[in-house]
Image (cartoon, rainbow, N blue to C red):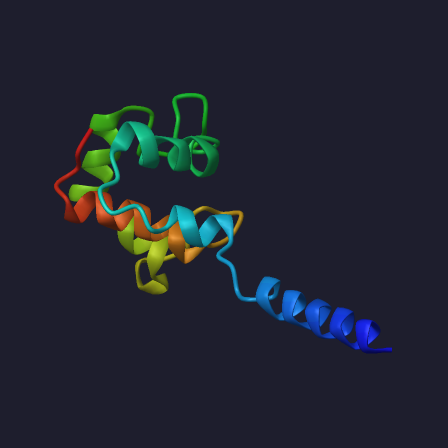
Length: 115
């Protein structure tokens, strides 16, 4: 009986230890301190924006290159469209991206658009 109690206590301790909050991939990916266009921003743009914002898409501005994306962030309202509804419809049209993904783009802008 004593062994059974020890096993139960051990199992409870393991459950408590392994049930602690862990970060999801989205949360981890949002913690990029120094994002670059090539490594961090471009994959977001490819997966979320190019269906419409490409030469094959129906809408402008085109966002296929570093220069085009930088221009949309610098001179357009890209950040406002992905992070705030005050600029019009939230982008992408499929729905708002996770905040951690938006933060990658915002950190890229704040760090001076590193390529």
